[in-house]
Length: 75
Image (cartoon, rainbow, N blue to C red; front, side, top):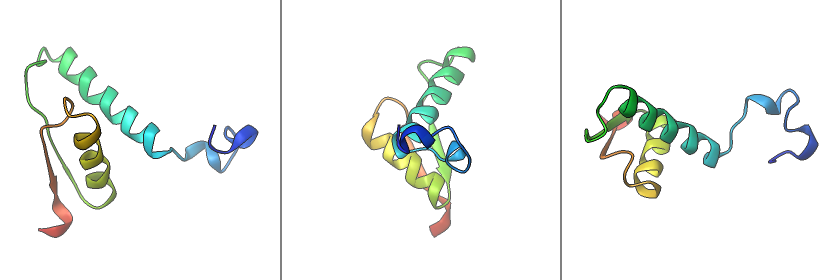
């Protein structure tokens, strides 16, 4: 756990590590594709600043999850 025995106490309970955030996003994408019978569909993720950093990292680490990322903070 990132904060040892304090990981499940306030204020640490609402913080995720980068790995946890990426894992949560990957589960969300694969679950939605499965539930919508869209397993062969490509995923385009967009957002600004933090969100885009997360989805870009996801597209680099887990290539099968996200096809394209778009950073709206630079537009």
